Length: 303
Ligand code: GRG
Picture 1: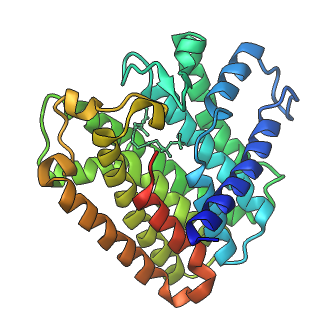
Picture 2: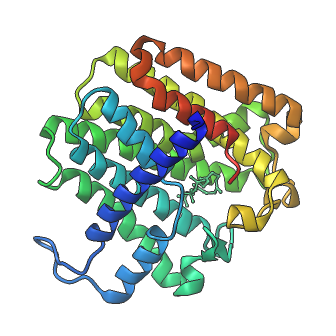
């Protein structure tokens, strides 16, 4: 069986595990200090979360945690928390005030299936729930590790990370950024959560600063690769394959590294990024083989 197939099977298995936990976390059971779980809001959150998706970020959390022998159940909860933030960003990104999309993961977007106000609240609630899930007593790691995770995830998600990157992306439609500007906005909008995913395992397990630095750099490489692959797919894939509208960057005249340098450059850069990611993981030998395969998967993905 090819490495690719083995990797995809592992990705699917871990996706099922994180989906089972997300299903449970978004059940109607009221948690301590919650007053009620309004059914319509809960249904919208479930629609935004339990609707397919590759679950790549959770996979990176679990695999980076496994590299440092972190407790798998705690890693799964951090993975689910991160997926809540990723899904919130997609729900809000699809809103009419942002990208105005009708389709996500092949299904109606949350504001189409429900309404705009409900979609805004579903995104808000997913964002806050992520921090609840990390800090809850069921996440069996030290308080020190929880605080470090919350700090890193807040910075990856907020003003200086994903939300800030989304702001720069919106501004880029009227003020076209130069190459450095494009790299920065993409590192924030898409890269920051992926970098957190890769680093989370080292944080969870209280690994050394050097381990944390290596995983963080690995995350930066694959974050860049993820965005380059996304830009290529936006140009070349169809909406049915992607489960969302494509060709939107070109239609809006939005500059990407692919539009600046061309497809051949992008493909060469992708293979260089995979090699760099692999080199960063070399000290971990065979134990890091799944993370190496993940870098390849990100660069070669078809949807
Ligand atoms: C609204 C605060 C806020 C942020 C939105 C993530 C984001 C920022 C916008 C999404 C727009 C977009 C399509 C970006 C390209 C990269 C990306 C995040 C693609 C979707 O991620 P995948 O491919 O999706 O991992 P699945 O569905 O597999 O989870």
